[in-house]
Length: 73
Image (cartoon, rainbow, N blue to C red; front, top):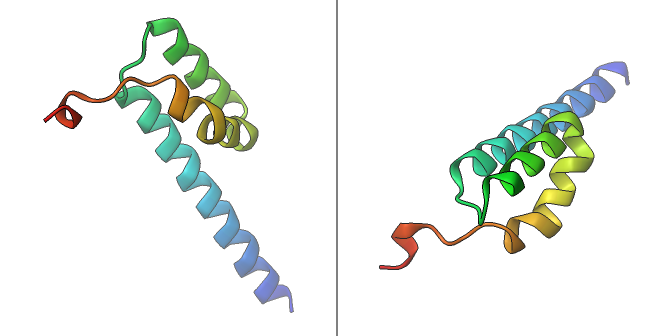
């Protein structure tokens, strides 16, 4: 029973960590209306990994970032 619990916890932990890293990379690589928004989102996600990432994906991701240049083609 302990091994199964450990596997579940490790899987969830690695998934959450990967989701957090992906959010940070997306924030850094996207273009924003101004640099202040980018810095605020980065700090929020960096210092509040789980909560900040969820808030970013449900509210900030679609409202703040501008379309990339390759999306215009």
